[in-house]
Length: 200
Ligand code: GRF
Image (cartoon, rainbow, N blue to C red; front, side, top):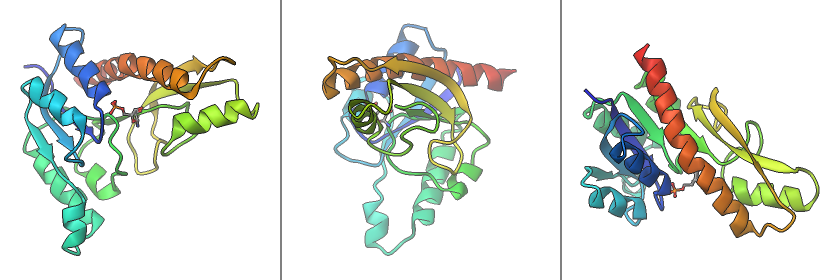
């Protein structure tokens, strides 16, 4: 049976699309059993629906409005995801930090995509921060990594790292496009790599 994959998104979902395409073209062996978004407006949900995939919208706001904690949100989300019995969970532009309580529910099967090199520009707006650092002369290149998820944001063991050059002529848009193109390839390779490891 093809490995069961759950993908968590928050936005455009171009990386989700890369995974869907890779599965459809048989570049990646797997089946997406659920796409979760914390945002109702995420375009990735439309991509999932168009691909005939089950979706779940799971916003934090409803929890906050009821005075519930972030841990309660994470544990309920973990419970929902567990119902789908995933072999792999991919954070593909998921903009929430997942708590230790969430991570404990799954056994080393969560990977994240991050648009920067290890220990550079952890957290949000990494591409913009890299671009600014380049303009100041602090760096000459940036990169993309796929890593295992641990409680420390963007600090888990890297599975794949690829450097991305920054050119003098680059606008921020140019750099973003170059990085996203690498991401779309690396997220598929990263998924493959961890599924191979888990199969061994
Ligand atoms: C990607 O750059 C990812 O690395 C970052 O958020 C972006 C998501 O893009 N954390 P998309 O929603 O997959 O198009």
